[in-house]
Length: 224
Image (tube, rainbow, N blue to C red; front, side, top):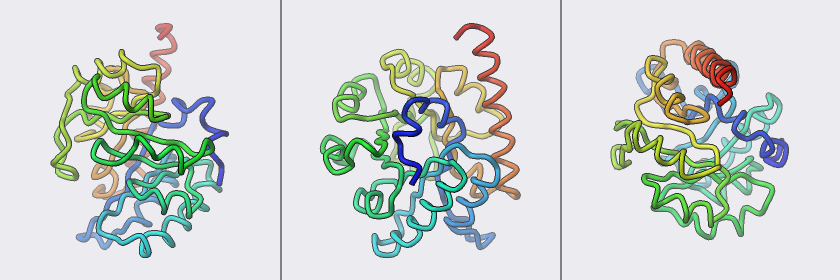
């Protein structure tokens, strides 16, 4: 495990292109395929999200990806499954508002990252108090997680203004609108179907990485 201790110092810089795994049955593409393509394409972080699998089914996959991501210098996180995150040697865990993020830090310890999804500025305080290392905001509606509340670009701006933690945008993000998300203050973009359902997932990640680098260069030039 690379360990979040190595990434926390410049965590914002390691969340530029953040790929969450998904499946594409039409292409016989599974979670491992998507994750390996993300690594090959230069993703900064990979999150294993497989609600259809049990913990026993998920753990071997998580262990494999923990090793592969560590070898590539890519952060590896697990969605929702705290036990799997700990037992697999993942760099961290990502939780939503419906999850028990308030007590997760106790089990995770200080060496793993904790990401928390927030919908409004009111959610930020609780996430920070729980020891979150970064926040995620759903920007636009997404079929991958239809229950998520879309905050829009205005909501994203409000959250980024309310915290010093890195904030990543998720939901409906593709190469064509990623720049808007970064321009609203997000440190990175989180994508699922834009990669998992792409004809060439690795190429899709490389395109997003180019956009993130360009935006960061422009931001640095503006002194932001």
